Amino acid sequence: MMWLLEIGLVLLLVGGGWTYLTRGQRAGNKDSLTMRRVDAYIETIRRERRNPELVAMSDTELRDLLHSGAHNMKIGGERKNWILLGAGGVTLFSSVIAANQNGMGGFVIAMVVGALVIYGLNEYLTRRLRAPLERHGIDVERLKVE
Image (tube, rainbow, N blue to C red; front, top):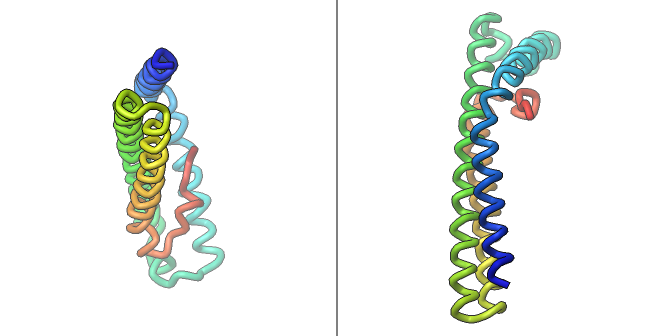
């Protein structure tokens, strides 16, 4: 049974390393898509005229605000993913220790507690990531590039 946990840990580390090594290839494509989304959102802001603060800005100011917001969201999202990966690693390590001490029951309890902590951490970090843009009345979903 322990060999299954060890294989899972190795796969987690290999997957995280592969994602880290190939992120540069995807960055160029995402930047061009982000700029297209920013331009489309500027047109929407001009057409709908809902937020007077955003409508009063020039196109250059809006482009800078939206592009920097999207960039900050991208960087914050990467940081959030690394934090969650680390929390998952700590959860797995703690669960293995609990399995050695208390058997399968301890493993399951540690995994459930870890999953709840990771869920709460994900929600908190996501809300914190969106807050600066939402303060300006910007729809965050229109800037997301996945």
